[in-house]
Length: 129
Image (cartoon, rainbow, N blue to C red):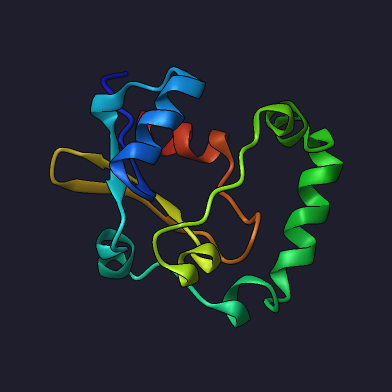
């Protein structure tokens, strides 16, 4: 599988460096977006209504707890550091996943609500097809 993972994250270059130090993720594959330019251009969902009052939010959180007990969250909590994004409304920003093969889009997923992330298996299926 010829694949490269790139991550765009809300935040500053300084915060990206802290993330890399904590996780070991390659800095050359991480792009900080302090002004939300990428998220806005891609049309990712944002706002209180889409984030907290979306009917999918409690179900996605429940599913995560039932699936693995949110072990990934339990793992990160001892290392968690409070962080305020550059823009306050970025705390209400949803993300997503895109997969490409050259110029061809293999997958587009917009997180519908808090915790409503795409399954890793779905990403792998898309890039292996």
